[in-house]
Picture 1 (cartoon, protein in one colour):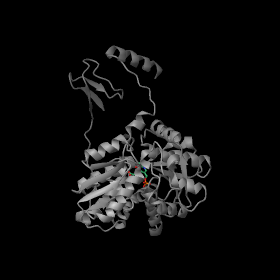
Picture 2 (cartoon, rainbow, N blue to C red):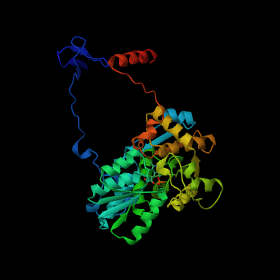
Picture 3 (tube, helix red, strand yellow):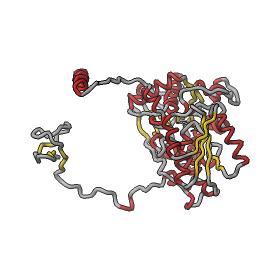
Picture 4 (cartoon, rainbow, N blue to C red):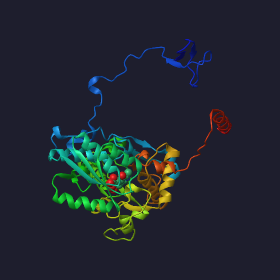
Length: 408
Ligand code: AN7
């Protein structure tokens, strides 16, 4: 490879240092000695956007004309070497669900749920939400030509998620109270009002879309891992993922099933607190409280599905305090270049605990599901604490940079 100055034409050897033209300070362009024979894959072999519908055999048989997709799913599964070493779990992987079209795993479910809504003849959809469900339902409803209505706890939704719902033009109902109050309102009204199609995770069709996380993990790893660690709020996702793994075990495409670990925030831990005490049912939390607003939920509607998933898989529930959630968020960002929202970081904080307790061991292959993107909660990201310098002008900026260069 060579470099050529766009301004004066000077040619240089292809040094990987990023510089400008030494003669005239013009910008350089990369010149290849040989043109590639072929750039694009042959037409038939190119992956097309099917979203979760690429698993149509295992999904509800909704007629093709009603199916909606925004190319959700097929998210990366990445190895976390540095963080894994630090946690004593060297075979650690993360499923990057924040890379879905609206930035969370909810999109997998909404592809199926909104398709079901359309097939059912609905014109409007409604969800109660801590934010991500609202963003996702709004996007998929619009994609399907339907009207979104979202019910959220007033002041309880992260800035990015609220902006998404507003951007898609959803009608936003802000309830004084917590998520559980918003859900109660939705649950009651949809019993009477057939024109509102509910897309919360008590909708069984929606959860079918979310089980595809398990399929993709087995596709990538060749078999099920030892542990799958998932943050738990309304408790639908952990149950859906477990269902996916069980189906692969039944079909013979996996030789084993993972143990499921559900992680809640300490101030919103109806399942983890009951599990710890050896009870048979959850301890409802009237005023759930955690900085992880996505999982600030006191009465998870899917608790029984989740409980069975954890029991059947010989898994566990655990809970983590907010300061450990923040530490995990920082560790993901600084050790791995992964910025996630606090609820997702809670899963990593939970894994740290399970590893310290020895339940998860150094030989275990572990998949942690990073459920939502860091941009969802910009306030949480900005509060992690990074050096932030202010320069009054160019001269001061130069001085600061020279100082930083000496320390680099
Ligand atoms: C990033 O959006 O409940 O246990 O209303 O947004 O299936 O509820 C979000 C939940 C984990 C918990 N991580 O999943 C909502 C909502 C993120 C989330 C969860 C949520 P579930």
